[in-house]
Length: 312
Image (cartoon, rainbow, N blue to C red; front, side, top):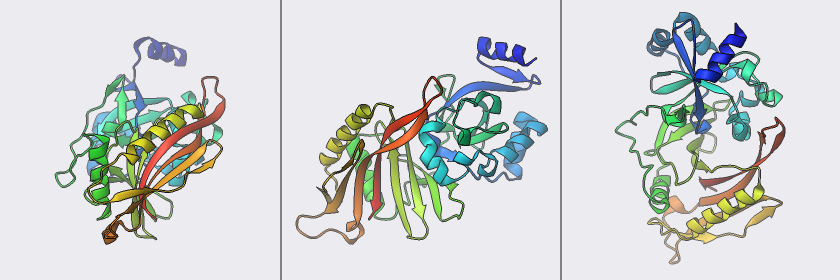
């Protein structure tokens, strides 16, 4: 029976279990929009049950939270470290609940991943619909609340002005729903309504201990550090060319350690009249070393670029 199902998957690219639930191959565009501790209340559980049936819905509720996931992604720290490898999960789209795509990661089809990412049993992911591509097409997107303007469009110049202006009040008008938190509940990850030009993800991190919120954008990675270096240098050039309404930027000395690089820009005002809200603002572009799995199943280094706006 398993061989027959496998053949159907390969031939039709979708398959059904119990002739009720269709599993469609899907791709996650942005794991930064993954919900790790989603609260399945009565309304969302009923919506899920109606779509999938009681038995499968119960499995999704139990295995769509970080406590059910493999150790490498069972915490915010682990997911941040392993995000470049998470794109290698073999996933299937099941349904959409409350504007969130429900994705299946079958244990049997993810044995190619490193041990800390391999699920012992089938697990499930909930992601913002806009972060998922189904059979090569974007899934239906939800409209953000009226109080949170969508400002993803526009040039890099426009987007950075929106971000820097939003920095002054802790990005409160640019922050979407909560999608993750660390095990102590002291660092909380939120969706961003700003997606920078050419970035694959954007999100905010709120640190409750320091009472600060920072913005993070991730750019496509590569196993070739030269590709990451090209993206890094292009991004630095864009930051250097910015004409921000709130402040000017001064360029610090670049830090280089092998293929890992960091370039920090600090807010300043040549007349010495920098607004108080910006006196500790940094914009940083950096190359980060991660890991991914190549076509042969071997774990290799992966280099990607981050742009971050934060309080130093």
